Image (cartoon, rainbow, N blue to C red):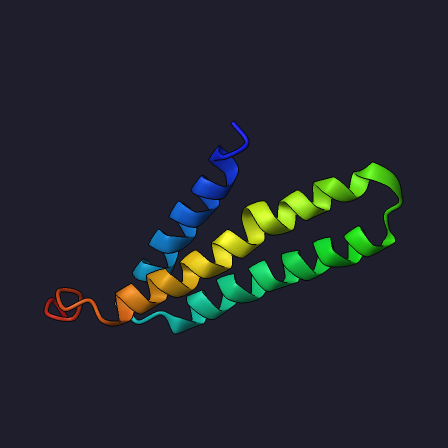
Length: 90
């Protein structure tokens, strides 16, 4: 069950990045990336200020959702940018 969260974050961000750039919506892609970076920054700040073992929750959030989401968003955007079938309909 623990592996379902990173897989879901990766898969959803991959599809979102591909759909955003294949439809020419770079602003949506930038907004999603900014949201993930803000979430990662918040979790990193909370990780630095939280004592004890509660730090593991924020570490898992960063490594299990934010980083796979950012990587997949970039890969999906790259795939959406060079998708040959996306611009033929326009």
